[in-house]
Length: 416
Image 1 (cartoon, rainbow, N blue to C red):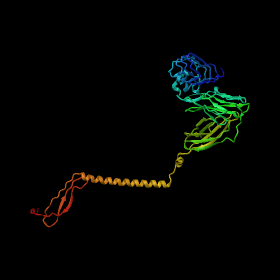
Image 2 (image 1 turned 90 degrees about the vertical axis):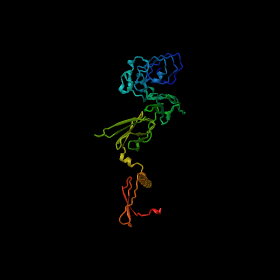
Image 3 (image 1 turned 45 degrees about the vertical axis):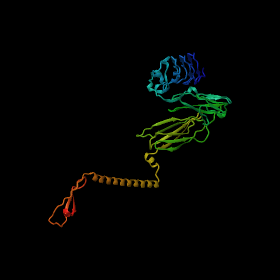
Image 4 (image 1 turned 135 degrees about the horizontal axis):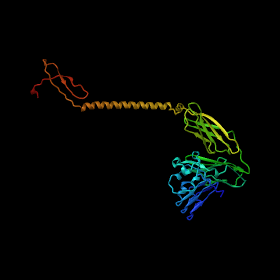
């Protein structure tokens, strides 16, 4: 079956007597949906060697309770999170011809046996990967015909897929129009095609880790639209202490742009180069986690299938910390005055309360303290003069004796 591209969801369903599946030597078979096999209780052997498969999902295997052996050799296996389950020793499945099961990607594992890569060396989540075998780079069709563009991707978590037309329109799964329809698994149909539908179609597969993109150009009766519009420009929309926002406008029929930015090179700050590829419907990008007061050179490279690439660069310096502080919101003078009056009033209230509490504290101690008063008459030689008496009081924080002037009057006992 040379045209077999994928085995989609529930392709083989409710076959209780099926014991073996053999889908081998299909150069375009690059994707098997995690739920492709459903209600196959007696399936024991799964032959998938000699295809263009980059992975076999764990859910696919777990849905086959009686599975005993799998043949996956001679496939371009990508040793990442999707096949991590193969080396976790949690399955009794036997892999046929394991010596012919090699890693093709990522580069650090290229050429190694799949079963020799420890599962702890593989991430639990990974970027989507669209198999290049699932969709060609260029196709030619006749006017009035229909064409199906296939796009499949492996990743963990499972990616979402959408298509971008030459006009920049984004089509999500189950989106329908007079000319286009996108299937849930990723196939994009074009009906009754004319020269108006010629151009570049881009498939985007994305999850929380990132995205992968593949583009295909569609010629209709030998016609392909050329790039039109004004000159390609890159503009700086916003600059902050740790970010730069740039915008650009690309002509229809261009591929996904590449963005590259790097710092200047000197003895103390070596050059750091960063690159990213964004979908063709994106025309704005936020460069984040930048260093303050640093000059960056930002380049946007846009290519088309028939023209040379177009590259534009801008030099931008991020704001310094002092400049960022100056740009903060300033309070109006009236607001500052009101806040000052309120603070003074609050301070005066606090002083008054403290003084009142201190006054109560001192007199409370005098009342509670033990005190004694003694008034004793003292006779002198002069009976008509005033006499002095000493009043002795003991207590906290007071003098031990106080001299009081008093007059003593001699009254006879018969007066009472």
